[in-house]
Length: 280
Ligand SMILES: [Zn+2]
Image (cartoon, rainbow, N blue to C red; front, top):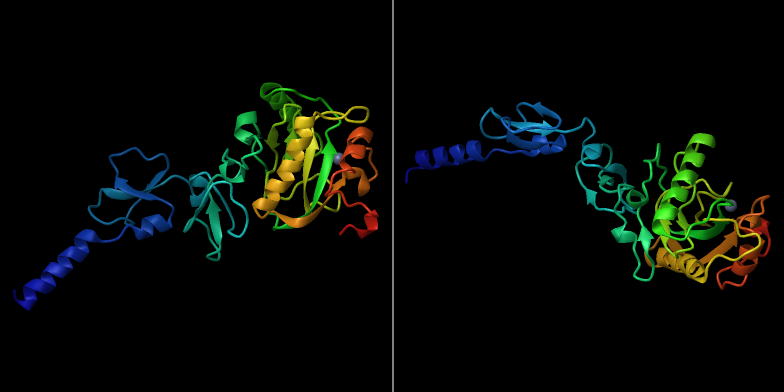
């Protein structure tokens, strides 16, 4: 084989293989433009014939695949995809943040109900919470209680509407909520700053028992679920192993989480109240 033919062959291969990288960098997929594209076709980003074009489904490539850009040391309920976000290499696209994927947050001993399952509205804004944190707060909603997944879904929607529409929060305030069925319902979830405990939202997670627990205790299943949730957070790296647990009233002028529940959590091993001034 002569050198001329060899060079020609290499050049031909190069042309025919080409590269789809420019399209991928735009968050698109190369396909023949006779196919349906739910977004827009962009020319000259794909290899091959001119009719093979780049289908980009959104101007925001991460949003186009249902994700949110965030720094990848933060918890992601789905998986991280590279090349979808601007900025540094560690700013990556988390594909199922608050879009129903709680699989990575599940610990065997607790039943977590995802936002999609209870019918949550999307957050208007997400502020990432750096982990691990060392505080875990217990609240009650001081509202309706619930005993089944269906009943709890309605209560959760009411709490979320109240927090977003009346109080102007970006989302339901709590990290997680618990029903009398012993299920844990995903609120803001892991890795997200909540709106639950004034001055401490960036330092800890909060679980809220749905109901009013001034004069009665929540069910044993639900109490066990709260403890297991905190332990799950530790095992997943979101909460420090030597974390401290408090009631909302320990750091705020409130009856929350109710007299009965407050007396109960003070018996829990992780309860660590000495004086609010020492909580920081
Ligand atoms: Zn509270």
